[in-house]
Length: 447
Ligand code: UGA
Image 1 (cartoon, helix red, strand yellow):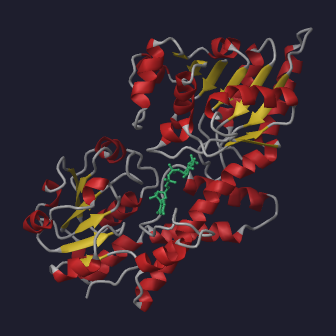
Image 2 (cartoon, protein in one colour; image 1 turned 180 degrees about the vertical axis):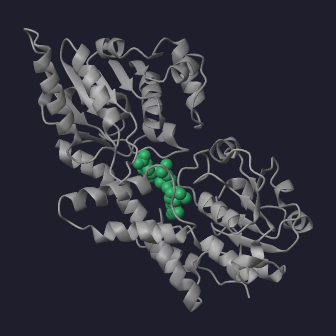
Image 3 (cartoon, helix red, strand yellow; image 1 turned 120 degrees about the vertical axis):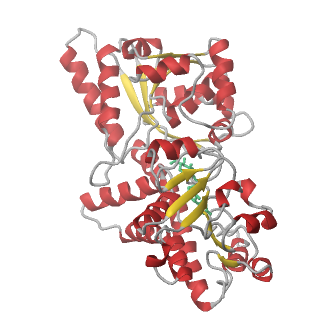
């Protein structure tokens, strides 16, 4: 099938590349010329396991191409996917102007039938707004024959760091579409992903849009609940890791997404929790639980710094001192630092007049892009070198290479044996026995 994907960000690029990989003919369109030039040469704007190979292979095979020409993408075929960004506006609600720009571009150039698919995470009701906009634009075009179209909601459930495998082996494919023609097209489009079992769940457009938010909010809620219980565990002297195993064994709760930590980050959970709260509010309903999920998370991101202050006897004692941060990305296997707990921590350290030596396996360039050159940030290429003469190590991201470090080596580099572990990677008992001041999340604190 011929597919056009508007937007070559995270969702758009992965979607386009993976649809090409199963044999569809895909054009990815973006207004950013530099990005498109790079993509044509196989230079990707994001780092994602497996994506580079798929993009290169499918450019080579002629299944995947890139353009900045919207009209060309609209002419390409019946399937038009909108996968542009919906960044949070000033007030936390999703800014839809990129989505509407694409809708306008499609309306301006479409000739025959088009299935217009919203893949971006959009507030409930957006697909209908897109439909109204296109209807109005087609009317205004005033051509004798008005082409028909459907607007379909087909939200994406990719996880960063596992986006390609999530797309190629989806748990479910949510399709919000009213008409039989639209549903048949989506069935055909996703047929290659559906062979071992039927994965498509058809529903109406609003339900599909809400499903996307509901999934992320449910997951974010699990994390905030666990983080809150971890905070209580510290006060009562319980071990959250035992509690986690204890409750995860109940299949109604499950083991997934109940890891306490330094708070969730990324481009999805924080934005989606806020956006749905905002939408509910605008409709006269105060979604208190959603507000609580966010508030708990924001506070959780400050707990690493709070532990540091407690250990050093006050923020004033951090001034002029150097601290090591391991892990800058919001989670492993990505260089994405949006809303990452590491940022909350580093910014608090800088406010307190402290210096940071940071190491991350892939996010150092991103950190440099965000913070630029500054005297109080040293990005160090080796995790042990990053410890040299620092007063404490703070672990913000659970990269595999941090799980079993050489503690002897760490001890020889650090000025003091202090570890604040935001991801519960080490054994409190062992750390204590080896003479470390070790603070984790929801486990017995160091004396
Ligand atoms: C999330 C969802 O998991 C995807 O299904 C969804 O498609 C995506 O948002 C989206 O809307 O685009 P992602 O943001 O890539 O994916 O990352 P997750 O793996 O879900 O992790 C989010 C955050 O939660 C990370 O900061 C992670 O460290 C944290 N987390 C996760 C915990 O603190 N504890 C856990 O038990 C699990």
